Length: 286
Ligand code: COA
Image 1: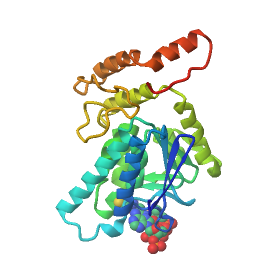
Image 2 (image 1 turned 135 degrees about the vertical axis):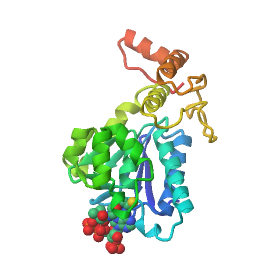
Image 3 (image 1 turned 120 degrees about the vertical axis):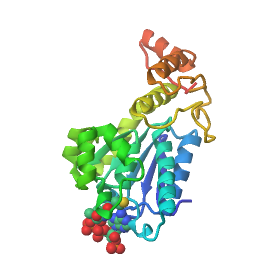
Image 4 (image 1 turned 30 degrees about the horizontal axis):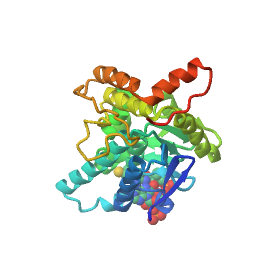
């Protein structure tokens, strides 16, 4: 049972709501630990096909790491905190099941980093993104310097991180930081679910391999299969995703292998047969 998260599993979509609205859902140690557990649930629960991360209340997605826990940290403790955040956010980015961020307000510091670790982002019109750590004499510590640069380009990322300024929903959309702005804020979750429902009908092993190959292009995340060293199940669907990965991190080579691996799946045979028989495919994740 989580204390700082609310979770819901409906129609194979697992929604994780960070639930500290009085502190604008700031990520303290307990939130981080519970988020880690919830991410493990995404990997291991076969009833889950995809996930949403959002924040409680109308004001914030996540307003950052909990600044009240920063006071008195040593250099070593600061580095360990960053390493812990990196590990959890990397597991989000590496998840073979899609994880969407539904950004319902402030996504600052660790909140912006959490949204960026997700595979794509939808937001409300009141969303505000930023990496204001510089205002605290800090730098982004949960992957922000890397993921913001990868998503919006070096010049824009440096300016935003150096100024600590906030980016509104329209600018975030123009920059490619968010995929969609949902004008009616009460429709944010339903729109996010709609998008994930479309993906949930696709072949899970193909979905996992697309995420894996794109992550190599982005320099983000480990591979689903052999690249993992942390004991995660190689393929949550019981297949052999990534089993033949000896690409050495070369995305083009990995794409060739993964493309080939798809031909060994039942779902690929079903997809091609369904197309030729002019019917909807029924994918099983095999
Ligand atoms: N860590 C800890 N507490 C936080 C927090 C954070 N990152 N962000 C907000 N809070 C807390 C506030 O301290 C306040 O708590 P209180 O009511 O007990 O005093 C509560 O959340 C509400 O925030 P408040 O600042 O009063 O709301 P606001 O509407 O005036 O301002 C923000 C909203 C987001 C602009 C402002 O809260 C802010 O700048 N937060 C920090 C953002 C940040 O620097 N993040 C990166 C951290 S590394």
